[in-house]
Length: 285
Image 1: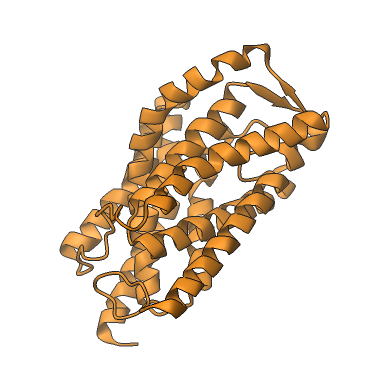
Image 2: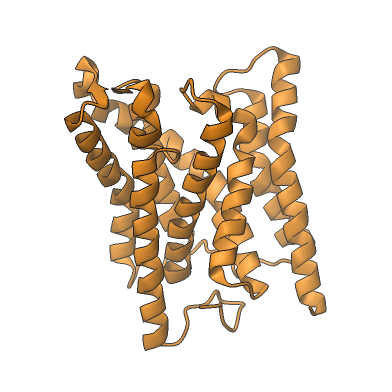
C-alpha cells in the first residue's frame, strides 16, 4: 500500500471512530441535560459530527475535495434521480397494500392526512439527510472505493458502520416490543442492502444528491407512516410487514433493487469506460 493509500486508510479509520462514538457522546449529553426527546442537543452532535469530521479530513488532513460528489450531474442521470425519489414511496405502497390485504396491517382512520404529514416532513428530512449523506456517500464510500476494494466489500463496510452509527438513538425511531437480539441483526441487514442500492447509484451518477433525495423520501414517507401511526402493523407480523429497513418485505424489495442497479452498472461498465470519481483512475467492477 502506497503512502497516499496509507493516509486515506488512516483518515477513514479516524472518520469511522468519530462516527461510531459521537452518538454515545450525544446520548451522554442528553442524559446529563435531562432531555432525551427528538430534537435534542445530543442528537445534533450525533448528526453533525460525521460531516464536521469529513470537513476536517478533506480540508486539513490531505483528503481533498475532488471526490466529494457535490455536483448534481443531472444530465444523463434523470432516470436515476426519478428512481431515487420514487423508490421508497412505491415500495411503501406495495408493502402496505400486501400487508393490509393479508390482514397484517390496520390502516388508521386518519390516513387521509398522510400526504399532508409527508409534505411537512420533507424539508426537515432534506436538511437532515444533507448532513448524513454527505458524510457516508460523500466521504466514507468514495474513500473506500479509492483504496481499490471490490465495490461489494465497500457497500458492506459502509453499511455496517452506518448501521452501528444508528444504535445510540435507535430507541427513538423504533416502535417495537421485539427483542433487540432478533431486531438488530435484521435491521443491520436492511441497512446493508440499502447501502448497496445507494452505493450503486452513487457510482453511476458520481453525485451524492440522488442518495440525499432517496433518503429524504424514505424518511418522509416511511417514518411518518410508522411514527405517526397512519398504519398499525400487528405485532406478530411486524418482522414481515414493516416498510422500514428491518421488515423482511422491505429487505427483499430493496435487495432486488440493489441487485438490479448492480447489474445495470456492470453492463454500463462493459459497454464503455468505467465511471470513476474525478481523482481516481478506475473504480473496481
